[in-house]
Length: 555
Image 1 (tube, helix red, strand yellow):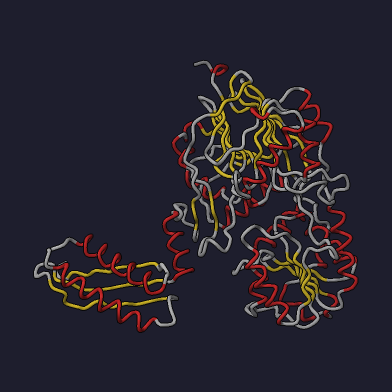
Image 2 (cartoon, rainbow, N blue to C red):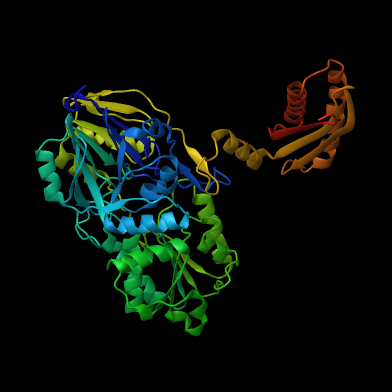
């Protein structure tokens, strides 16, 4: 098949029916390009997990076709999985905006990635040819500088990916190129992939200038130290905080490695224009008056190991909360993190801190994503033939699809997809294609292999219903029990000792009867597990994790 006749497949390995893990693929018979490689941060429902990344099996099976990775901007849900991706398969080149490049390089260093990675910068006027794909860009406004949408021209039609954007007419930083977007739309767009994060919210997302006003007010009324926590990748917010701190004669101390990297990168490129004398090491804050200190830190999501959680728990070596401190959470809660945030807020208040979160009184956060009116404007400017909402939970995608329908996109041309679903573009027409493996992979520590769903499920069971381990030693030749069953329980019941004794007696009786049938190891373990499950559920109405351990004297 000639290149010009090859259909184009479009699919997501992450970013659909979720917020995070953005990974979108455009594939022909000969070539495959990827847009973004993000992580999703775990909520309270994923104990022990550090990151959630996509299943890269499809890309590994097509590794000979993978030609390039394009990055829309430097947020973690768009670049955070790059170290795991490049350990899974070879990526010939990464194209990214300059700030994202700096953040990616820091990330690769932190993860100790030894492979040499070719990273090239693109700008708003760049045009990059990757085999039959022609890739160009347009600037958008977001909560981090150097954010872009991407246009992919293929022999079968044009695809536009908005990236994360908002239509802010008074932005902090770069403006969205509305006239360029209109020209792209006028030239004809077959498929639009567009950000759906705020699709449930009517109107416009408030301007970042609103946040600036609230931050200025907080600095004026705070009589003691100010501790502000936000996403380390929210460069626009960090820029505002730093500038207002200097205006109010406060020294800035930074806590958190990722925050240090972000500020360093933003200063290198001139996004944060603050003199060196305005920054002090955290261990020097006691040399200044309380109202001369501003602390910038990570941990706005209540992450247990982040700086703010350690401060709240009194575990940070250089900073303790004292009455009169004002602590500001300048971010919105990621779904699932509310319980972590509440825990940290309560700890801070107990220690005498005055905690401020986003509210009617103080607009300390503004989303970087578009609300309904902005989505309508983007759809109106692009007026695509086909539409695939991306970057959002299922309900957000569904609402965004309904918005497109009100603007004239036929319902049959709107695709509400899940990770792994694909579309096939051929001669400017789109049909649905095959489904690819796209289950989440759970990362605890830095092991690229990850942890599967079964392990995560076991952790959930342990967290909710506890654990029971039963150990027993046998002689497989004589079919005798040589060490009676021993039961150990964890986080299970107030009557653990009594229940443990009854479980031991029950398992011992069951095994004596079973051993007469000369069972194999698998049968012994499954019998123990089933015996304990039935008894425990009947007595307690709980379903703990059951772990049978059988040792054989002859092995």
